[in-house]
Image (tube, rainbow, N blue to C red; front, top):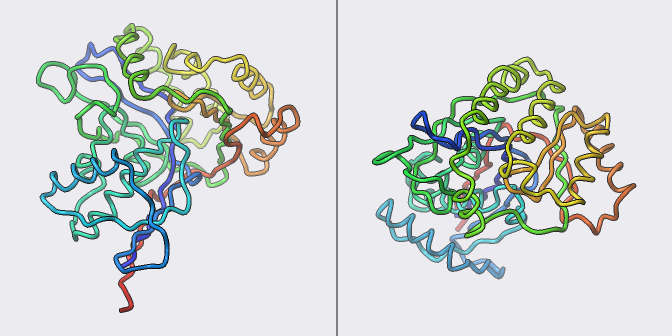
Length: 332
């Protein structure tokens, strides 16, 4: 048997409510992208290739999967052809673990949903964008988690340490095919993860209610309607404003002089409909109304900066299907 999984990646535009007065926290807004992606192939038969070496953390997640579903997984012989850079704001770890969980569920002939796999591999405890991207793609808003003693989550914490289930998806939209995102990943410090990420939540939460209220109004009265009406200019303006009003959790977190130069250049670029930073960065994104506009944005950056200043400088369409998964039976 051969199992092939190609995942999307994702941009995380921001968390909506890190206050909690209404009894819920988190709530995430983001988008699934076609590229970059993980392309992973599993072979049950002996093949003439050197299988990928799985890290201890990955093996521990497989053990959690086995415990959750009551199965015993074999040693995985997988070949990784494409990958998503880690810790740059593109959701690499969630996509990788959901891909492995999807492979394992098919090995064991488990008829389970992506949400159930996410519970097993403990993803989606803060943001649901990565899980929803893997499931069905699109531009996504989730409803966060119940908050307080005995609720889904009792503290402000990142997905890595949260045991909350993936949140409900309350909005999903598939915009026109010509919409593109430009991905600009400076060769700089990685985004917050591990202890740094946990400390960021601890030191800055809860955030004032008025900030949450302003952000919620922006979403409901500008960003979401513009998506339904396919108004890319208004949508892009909303994205840029959204990140400007999220201190420490938006563009202010990764506010190096170089990043500020990129933000300024995007603000002046007529081809850019909106911009921001994904999750805790360092990946910066720009929204474009066509592939040609996306290429124009990339060209304007390469005219002013050496390509060596970037880990990634590319464009992508929005993923509208979720992960691609194919199972082929052995010919033997």
